[in-house]
Amino acid sequence: MVVGFATTIAVGTVFLSLPLAREGTDSAPFLEALFTSTSAVCVTGLIIVDTPEYWTTFGEIVILGLIQIGGFGIMTMASLLVMMISRRMGLRSRLTAAAETKSLGLGDVRTVVVGVAKISVTFEITLAAILTVRLATGHDEPVGHAAYLGVFHAISAFNNAGFSLYSDSLTAFVTDPWICLPIAVAVICGGLGVPVMLELRRQLRRPRRWSLHTKITLSGTGVLLAGGAVFVTASEWANPDTLGALSVPGKLLAGFFHAVMPRTAGFNTLDVGAMNDGTLLGTDVLMFIGGGSAGTAGGIKVTTFFLLFFVIFAEVRGVRAVNVFDRRVGERAQRQALTVALLAVAVVVIPTLVLLEMTDLALDRVLFEVVSAFATVGLSTGITADLPPIGHYMLTVVMFVGRLGPITLASALALRQRERLYALPEARPIIG
Image (cartoon, rainbow, N blue to C red; front, side):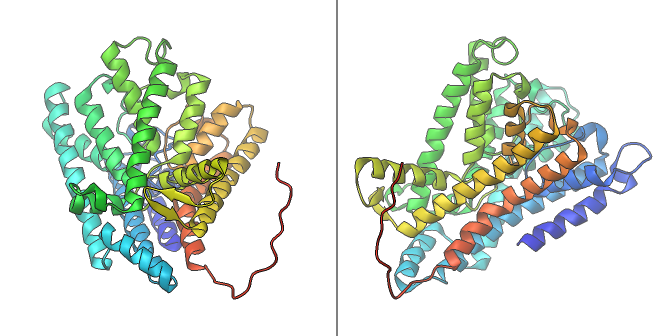
């Protein structure tokens, strides 16, 4: 999987380095091509050059192809890893995982690939049609260009990429619900993950039969969206550079849209660099958590975050077992969630410290860019393009690790489980 994504990035870099990919007569430098290719394949959306101004139509199509390959690849491979893990476990764990896998609709390789393809095509065609009609009728775009913009943004949205063919992203549509809401829905659905979407397709009206994974993902997503929307709207309500100048409906729409994007798309209808420090920190948290497993979203994933929350909640209450939705969560899953979260913190902290030493930028700005890169979000305060070359290379690595790291690590931990035939004497060190 790592080799496949690295190869795709390399091929994309070559194509973007061609003279016909860049506006003008010169070809794009290696760094710009590599960074853009990595951002597209990892469905991040961070950019160091203005996409519509810097790249030709050929270059934009290359970027779009990389987004589609990256999104389809990550959904397919992550889902196949779920199947592989379930078939490598011990008998008891395998029976439990098999029941979960069956309910998720991951029967075989063909089912996964066809399921991912159907879901992707359905969402992308539907969103492209809506955007095309709106851009042509409501924003006076020629039909052909409106269709091109609609297809590009539909693929970018469902794959949680956040690339836009507008230099200021979607700020021109901040109060247009016909643009913002369909894109937000596509981002949310793309970020739920293939297992959840397949299960909802089969058992939408039978929630009692949903798997634990689906229940945690959906409920956690709802909590994060509602809480994020309230937080962003309240925090930026009076900020004249963001929500302050909008009407009440406009504020509510823009606040909701910004709460959705950290899940991890990267479109913005507000100037992120003008937001309050508290809003940026809250957005950091939303980006770090990310979306659902086996989907296009990044971060440590909703299930990881809420599993840790339930572990802490049980410990505070003095309850030994961690029970969620009438199911007991195994200790191995708890340890895996903690491992993924702590290593993710390290991946964010180390590059942040290095960039702070290399630049004179403020901590909140640098941290925001690094978290955005790790969680493959693409939101930016506007400093990414101004970083030194070594900073761009560092963010390139962070994007790659953030895209594949949590999936690879979680899979490796699950596949390496071993049962010991003996147990050492228990000891209790002093905590706190």
